[in-house]
Length: 323
Image (cartoon, rainbow, N blue to C red):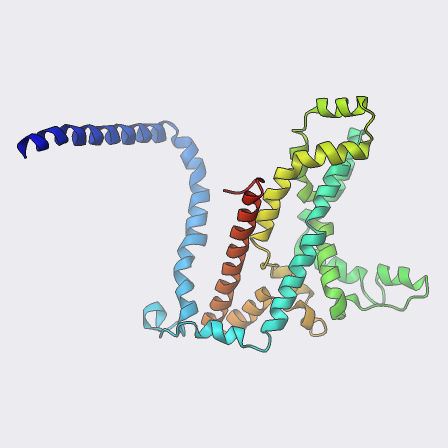
C-alpha cells in the first residue's frame, strides 16, 4: 500500500503543477491583453444585465404573480397560464397571423437583399454603384414611426399618391391600412423598402471574396453575365445565405412589436394581432404579468426549436451551420 501511494503521488503532483502553469499562462495572457478584455467588457455586461439576469423572472410564467408578494410569495400554478393561452379563442388567429407574416417575410424580404447585392455587384460604374447603395441604405436610418407615417400618407384613400395613381385608371380608392386583406402585404413590402439596402452589406462583403480569375475564365469560355452570376457568384455566397437563413429562422415567430402595433387598428386587427402585440396588451395594458410571460416563453421555445432544427438540417446536408 505504501509503495502504491508513493508511485501515484508524483503523478498527481505533476498534474497539479501542469494545471497551475496553464492557469498562470492564461492569467498572464489576460494581463498582457487587458485592453482587449476591457473593450469586450461593456458587451458582456450588456448581455449579462439585460439578457441573462432577467431570465430569473421567467418563473412568473408558472405562478399567479403578485408584485406585492414578489417571487417567493406568489402561488405556483404550474402550466395553467399556458393552458389558458392554448384554450383562448384568439389562439388560432394569433398563431395564424404570426406564422403568416413570418413566412411572407421569409419568401419576400429574405431574398430581396441577395438579389439587390447581386445586381449592385454587376454594376461597372463605381459612381452609380455608390449612388444606388446610398439611396437603398438611407431608409434603414428612418425611424419606424416615421416609416409608418409615410406609408399611411402614401396609401391614404383620399390624398394618397398610390390611390391617386390608381384613380387615373378608373380604379376606386382602396383603404389599404383599414382592410385586413392588405395588412400583410403593406407590412412586408414597406419593410423591404426600409431594410433591403442595409441587408445587402453582408452579401456584398461576401461577393468581394469571389476570385476574379473565375470570372475571367468564364468570359473566355463565352459565359454570359447571368451564367456567371448563377454559377460563380451564387455558389460563392451560399454559405453566407445559409447562415443568415438559420439566424432568420431563429426569430421566425418574433415578427416584431413596434411596427405591427403602429399599423394596427380596429379595422385590420383580425390580420394584425400577433404574439408580440397580444403579449403587450395582456402584460402591460391588462397587468396580467404571469399570463403574458407564459406566452412570451412559449414563443421563445418555438423559436429555439426552429433554430436547432434548421441548423441540424443544414448540418446533415453537409452545408454551413452555426455549430
